[in-house]
Image (tube, rainbow, N blue to C red; front, side):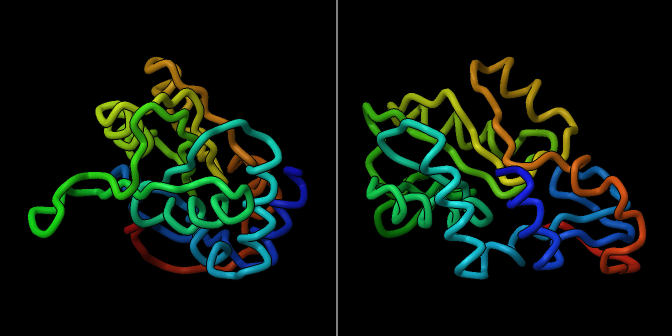
Length: 184
């Protein structure tokens, strides 16, 4: 499984080297552009199939923007409903932080990349506030920068399909090189 997902990341050029500012505010010499992979139907389907086969859940959810295509794909692969967690509460129309009814459901939260775990923890808190049970987050890639510890402190396990060290090792300058960038 891990080898196949790592191969998909490499095939679609997800690993870039340069000087990047991550969503967590940390600087990094590499960037994992998972959106480049999940915008490819075959790759997205394969990731969703791996997640669907490995977990038991009533519903899947993703934090906008990175987790949404994963949640939709896992929903389609599993036949189970999905929810979208808004990064900000909507103030017009039907306000709220979640699209979808999560109350009383065991929800699997999916993420494209985890670094510090802040986005995942935000999603967990929103889901729990709305009455969901969340005990697992699945991420395509964990950058191994504190997310697992933060989530564990909050009673949630983090499962990574791939760890950054597994795909960065040996790729020091063979990947796409960029001079600057930001993770938005």
